[in-house]
Length: 147
Image (cartoon, rainbow, N blue to C red; front, side, top):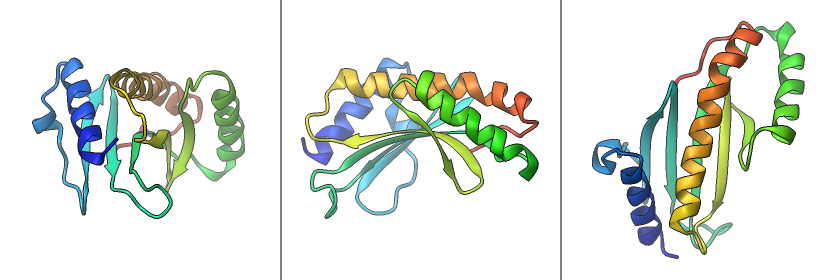
């Protein structure tokens, strides 16, 4: 699948969420596309990257910030909790660190990408982030992250 076709799939998926893909489009440096959506209390970013040496057909990456890292003394417990959540409740995506924030990430090549997969990935990342942003913030006395 071409990057252009993948962008069309993402735009169609955004429409099924009742959102306007033109309004959801965010600034993007270089080739590709970037969309910013809200799913409950979570911000979800859908990024389509141009082909590169590592991925000759381009990539789809969906990221949602969850919480800012808590105080240093709480991080070991947080990291253990995140690993356990990855094994039990992340459902096709994973918790990760980006700078000083915990995020939910889904990423794959756009090769053989289909509309149902894009839709499910956006919904899943949004639902997991929306569920865990408040829960983890309370549990670890942290601040909800913002994109």
